[in-house]
Image (cartoon, rainbow, N blue to C red; front, top):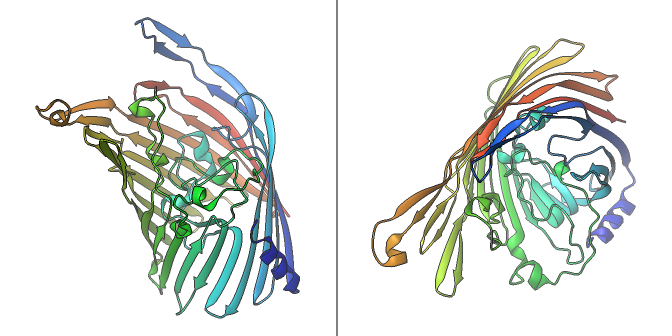
Length: 455
């Protein structure tokens, strides 16, 4: 990494407090049953997929195995350095196993009371959304993470300046992707908070490929500032915090294979700069309400004889948590709408989506009981053809490509902590059978067991 020298220099000057922590966690599924399902063949005859039983390690998407994380930091009043190393085993869908390593290297320097400089590979969650997902949702209906409300600041080889000119105000400016010698084999420019159930640990681990990437290739026309991330948050005393940010990206629309259908287009794959805003209300004791919205900027592409405009979906999220004594209830609603691909011949409208989750819990002292309920609605995907542009006459005609559908799941679990270091959580989860865009999705019953140990 281009900032290793700065990191080592900072570490050499730090002679104050040094802390080291290790966390190990895994998810075991002692039993899972996938229900049978009837289906119809293309020739009109029917068939049936029988039910299946199994056991394994990892979450329902098969993208997270056992992992160990090492976090070491050395800090004094003006300097700091940190290393976070993660080792993760992965069982692939074909049964093959792999082991990956991911590291976070960060150095910071505060030359003034109101200025701090950070360099390296790191995450900054000071302005991130405040209500996240729950592990059990991985086994019912997948849920967006905290970034759906307001994206975290994520640097993969970046330089960031943080300003606190007045009390309660934080302003950050990040310039990322500054290292032309590292091209990662996974999680490259993945937009956080846009895919249901997305979490960094769900990505299959892999070793970085140390390949030189010319600036012009990495940043399109070589303008590094396109990957700038500007954010600001102001904490209004006794009311809450307002946040706004601009996240830069090199505009890129999905590439389609020759045999791809219009339903194969993933609107989340539209890499576009976006503007985000959020407000977290904390003015009532025990209550937290966080609401956020995202406005991706449109992408215009020109080709010989035609042009395209891609608009990624707009997004709105609302989360709330209320605690009263031993009882707590939390919920989130995330909606995406308005995405489309416009060209001379017509418009492809992406399906709107609504993702809602509720998880009340009660602390009995020895353990906490948690109930989970998740629901997802997928709207229609439609294609509008401008007949006058195609054959010189007629009105626009709209065709429904995908009719959408619904998903629903529930879970019940208990969680307990042993000596403050060992967390155990186990329960039952069921995802109901559903039909989405004409595809029959099977019902799944799972008994997951979550284990975490830290020291």
